[in-house]
Image (cartoon, rainbow, N blue to C red; front, side, top):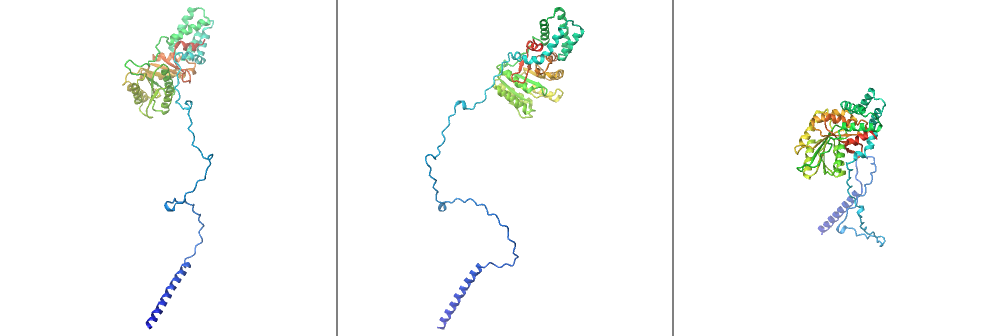
Length: 407
């Protein structure tokens, strides 16, 4: 009995101890822990983080689907109907330009040429019409011709022939004097000289090759582009070779000229080997069966020996395909006698076959035609008379002299 009472007492004590521990644990959780550290000032209130997009839920956690608002028939957008495109609305490639036929170009441009050239003719006719042609008058005539850049030897020759014919003629009416002067100038320029361009495909089927050379600033690339138009106007299929690799703008400019008339341009990397580009141009022209290859070379100063030697290399490399049919030297008519110095150096490096005189409409010194022909022994074949695309014309001595001396 005593053992039973003792067991009950022990059980009561154990239950009480357990209950005390539970209550003590709860109080500890409710009270903040004691700290012996110094309390710091409150930190500034941080901005609330931006709300993050709620992650999509799948399975049982997915939200029930939301019902879309009902729409009436009028509110429902129908798919757009296909729009019919008419043939007129279709964007087409720009049409190729049709260059003006070369026949008669110089006659059409005669008025433009005469505005700047006939000062020479009028001055000569005025002097020749004097009542008395003494030595002073003939010296004035000689000075007028020299001022027009005809050159010393041609001037002396022309004056002697004029003196002889005036003496034989006796009477000197304006019409007679004009006819006399015209005949002598045409004779001096060379009416019977062959000025044709050899641009037709050769007998063995290879294309004709034209090489365009000249110093910087004479309008050589522009002239090459206009010459391409002349060839197309004459019915030739043309391949252009952009062998001026020193200026990317030159190749771009030549390509633009070609695209306007349907002529393809072969070009190389900027700073590349000009001879390689010229060789490739001829090679591709042969493969395509083209009639003519027109190669625009880089402008170079006639005093630069290295550049002139490189020009000779271009010609030699091209000749591996066959002979070069034309080497055309482009000269600025406004440079006068200085152009003769340039022409002489170029002729020593490559065999010049013809002269292209540019900017002839802007000078009264048309006598350069005579001087350059006498200097090189080659004819002027083309003249540039303006900025228009078709203002490059075959040179015709009769029409040129008519513009030179006026009506």
